[in-house]
Every structure is written in structure tokens, then in C-alpha cells.
Length: 218
Image 1 (cartoon, rainbow, N blue to C red):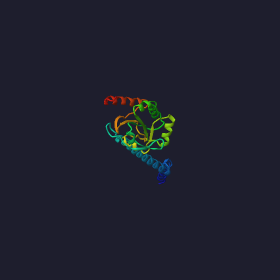
Image 2 (image 1 turned 180 degrees about the horizontal axis):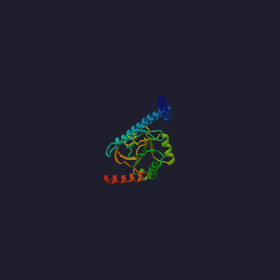
Image 3 (image 1 turned 135 degrees about the horizontal axis):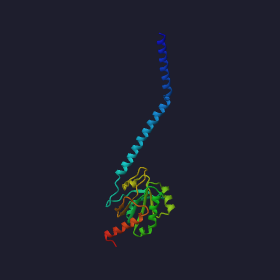
Image 4 (image 1 turned 120 degrees about the vertical axis):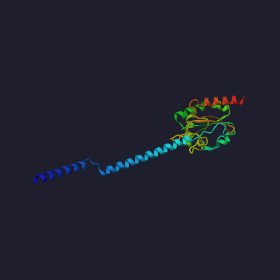
């Protein structure tokens, strides 16, 4: 009897010891709760970012740049001086180059703008009015124009009305793609859906020469 009691006693002690060891190794309830909340938060953020990225990609994919031969959009927008510019009125004056760039005063956009600035006299002599468009605000466009002495209009298309009207894709960061459209008599006669930076002016001048040849103009 004493022997059996001793076995039972030892067994109880061992079981109690195992339970104590398990309890010591178990994480604190508060830590478990924090870990669960953190995991849920990460999952929610992942779903939100995935949805946001998906919407941005879908929006960019749906964008259809205006076709050659189509009537150019006649939107109104504010320029770097805070004045309203009516594209429809500009078209009445002759050829208009409407070019889009992602963001003012960034390397590629600066090279693109300076290309047009350096050949501005040639473009003007061919009757071209140059209009730059981005989603930047008025102040940013003004600073950009002054810093690089750009002799043409920059539209602050913060609400993306002009960008959308021309069907220019917008990336995940909200920047317009780099594209260019040449408008004659209110109709798009040339477009560059992957516009260059340093060669933008050269490409436009080449397009003008090609159009002149095609139309048989003098």
C-alpha cells in the first residue's frame, strides 16, 4: 500500500511539474492578443494595397489615348500664371503641340521641356504653339517655368481633366505618362505615345516635315 501511494505521489508530482513547465513556456495572453491584432492589421493593409494597385493598373489599362484624326479635346485649365487657358481657342490660331509629362522639375521632364525651349524659335516659325501639361499645381508649374526659362504655357492639370480628355494613362503615383499630340485645325494629326525627353523637339520637327510632305504643302 505504501509502495502504491508512493507511485501515485510521484506521478502527481511529475504531472504537476510538466504542467508548470508548459505554463512557463506558454506566451503571455497579452502578447498573443497583440500578435493576432498585428497579423490582422497586416492582412488588411495587404488587401488595401492590392486593391489600390489593382485599381491603378486597371485605370491605366483602360486609358485610350485619343486617335489620329479625332477632334482634340477643348478643355479649359489654369496655366502657370493662374490664368484660364481654353484649348479650343488655341486650336483656332494654328498648330498646337500638347505634350504631357509626369512631374515638373524632374530630370526627364526637364530634359523634355528644355528640348522644346531650345528649338522654340523653329517651332514658332512653323506656326506651332507649345502647351505642356502635368498634374502639378500652379506654383510648381510657375517655379518650373521660371527656373528653366520656358517660353511656353504650362497647364496645372491638378484635377486631371485635360489628361483624362486626351486619354493619357496615369501611373500608380498619379503621374501622367509622357505623351505628345500635335493638333491642326482642331484635329489630332500626330501623336507620340512614348514621347522622348531630350529628343522631343526633334521628333516634333520631323513630324511637321512629314506632314508637310504628305499634304504637299510648300
